[in-house]
Image 1 (cartoon, rainbow, N blue to C red):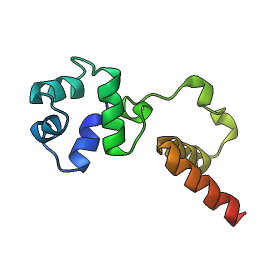
Image 2 (image 1 turned 180 degrees about the vertical axis):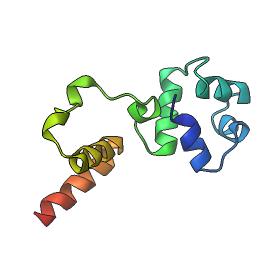
Image 3 (image 1 turned 135 degrees about the horizontal axis):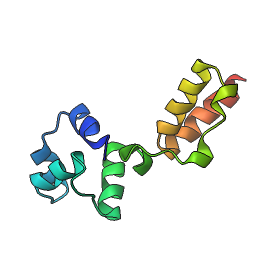
Amino acid sequence: MKNLKKLRQSRHLSQQKLADKFSLSQQSIYKYENNLSEPDIQTLKNFADFFHTSIDTLVDYTPAAQLPDSSSLSSEETHLLHLYHSLPEDMRKHVLALLEALV
């Protein structure tokens, strides 16, 4: 849950306020943010929906199969790809449509 704290703080929420939104304890949020325990899959889904992100982003996970050969990409391309992978699926579709319209 590496990114939970960043996402929570970006919304100016305390651990208690986030906990209240999901009927959890403040201690649970603290444990998730400090890798002392892990939320169940439904809680992960709820967090992802609330923060408009993916579970992968919440847990800072990128499957190896999705990583391009970085030696063939410029630093700008690598950065753009990272940003794209950080978007929720529905936003990726909008970005793709915009790029196709521009090309």
